[in-house]
Length: 237
Image (cartoon, one colour):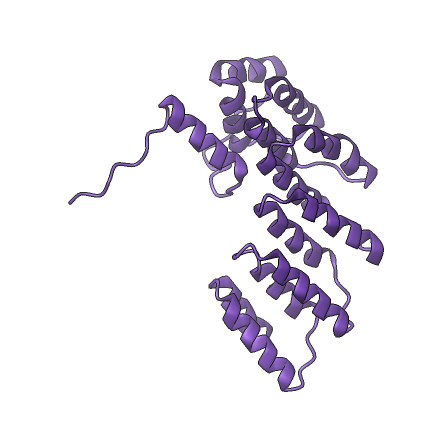
């Protein structure tokens, strides 16, 4: 059953996945954590946070204990919707059921904050909430905070540089996405000066090419406005 549900979810066919799930239950099959988690993950395709909550409540009915993957999927949905407060509610529920967040949980929260441009809250999460959870931020966490600096009005160049320096001091290797995000905020000349000052390595061609996030959306919009990234030409007639 799990692999059939996974196939439906991978094809973004959530309705059919849930129909199969309901038939499975009608046949007397007791769902497990893996079954529920793949369905909750499927809600992200439609950014259906209420659907994820409904499935989470069903887990309680079947006495299936959630794990960190359950909550991370819910947090990612909320982040995609630009609803960081929903991510906070997920964290509160995690505390109630005593499931510890991992860095993926906080990365989702930061991505949600990035979409709203809440730099102050993003900095608080990066500098205080993550260390309080005895975790170390990864590159995507730093990038999300920089992305918040793009969305904020006006853009927060000073805070972006602070985050960039913290990333460099952490020992993590900045990837292409980091440099491109910083380029959108402070400009290429300033990025090159920071790279030289901090003795940072430049990314390889293979780095940063596959992941999509709010930074890319903001970056592309910024470059089109200043003429550095023209829109694709219309198809030939």
